[in-house]
Image 1 (tube, one colour):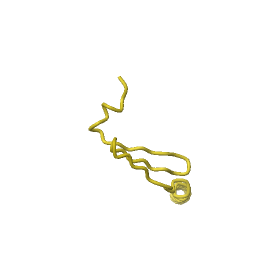
Image 2 (cartoon, rainbow, N blue to C red):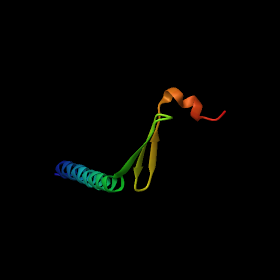
Image 3 (cartoon, one colour):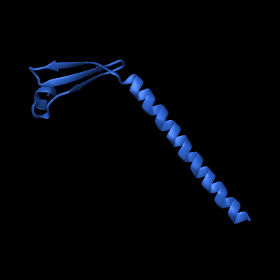
Length: 73
């Protein structure tokens, strides 16, 4: 009977881990969607860069072919 209870406890703890992981993943995705809503795009034709404006951050992307002009030194 002990083997049966060990197997049952192991499977229930595995199910609990899966449930907790699912809850965490859902909460993380909802928070990311709320906080990462794009508010605007910025284009700079002179440097070929693109920027994404969000509520708490700004991201900039530019071509690697002209990165030597961007880095000092």
